[in-house]
Length: 243
Image (cartoon, rainbow, N blue to C red; front, side, top):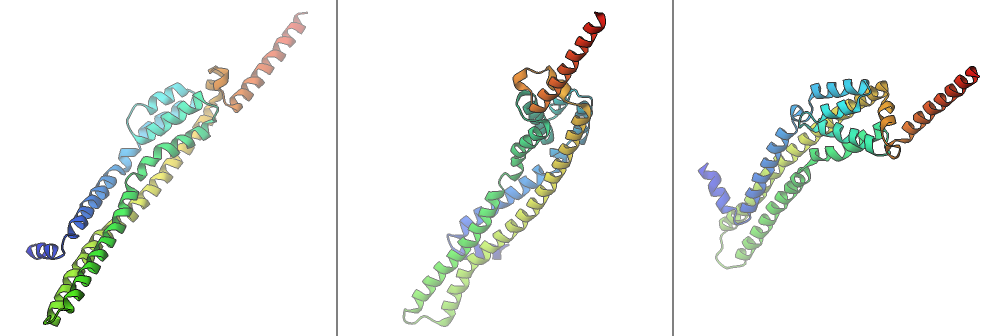
């Protein structure tokens, strides 16, 4: 431990920003690893209840179930159902749009982690270059021994080692987190697809038929027009039979 402290001190002023990069990168890695836990983002019981409500054609109940717990999948479903009910979007498009917006939180701080890995490496190289410049300046002076020059260059290389010790874990952590995010995205996609299937089984157009005309999707309007046409024909047939 004492030797590490000695190396840190010998590395010069640039070791401090390198240390800061290390602290921030590990903080991001730990925070993201905890936040990206599947149990924190996806509640399978909640999704099951939403699917059941959709299969019965009850959008209000589906939205209520989606709001029951503060998990990301519930937020996605709630926003998607809300968009479907009050905009022109069809159900699948509404869910996809909500997912694209809500799932951006999975990528929080990932750009910062990538930047830290690059900056730490460059800071290490900068420290080495500065140290070598100073070492060669000393070499031009009379009476400078080779041992002194070698020591100066060795000290300069400490910053490169420090920068790489920060960058390598950051790059590995970023790669592992991105892989986890991609897997979560696939899980979300499959869950939303199941909800779309359930909604079609439940014929969500029934709920849309109760909504104001301006809030219906084209598909809902078409179904409503067809139903109205059938009712008109039935009424005409009934009048004809009565005559």
